Image 1: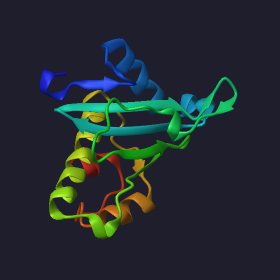
Image 2: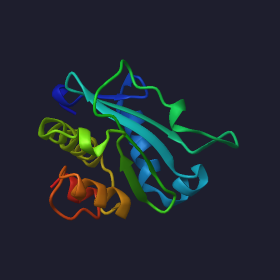
Image 3: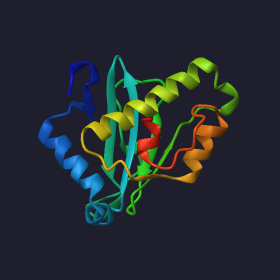
Length: 155
């Protein structure tokens, strides 16, 4: 991965072996089911994609988004999950009335960066985006085209 697209995974610069294992887990229905899916937070900070991702189930216990730490306090944080059946929910905490054009552009960039990076690493492009996420992105004007798979966000 080029240095201008550095991935910081769970607080550390991502290593090839770690990213390969992550993508394999995200793509594999059996692993997703065993782990109960995955929770994540992501943001772009100083040109780096920050991604914190954990299984929903760890050592028999339920995890939560607050268990995921991103370095510093980046703007435009995306929060979501990948369900066991391979459907992404990817939301943000910003109130709709606070979405200036500049913030919409920043969120669009954050969504594209997250999924273009994961796709470059081998994420299945046909994994679905849920209707809640798709509707939110269109209704807020962050995207203007229909989004049903991760490929559509990178379009």
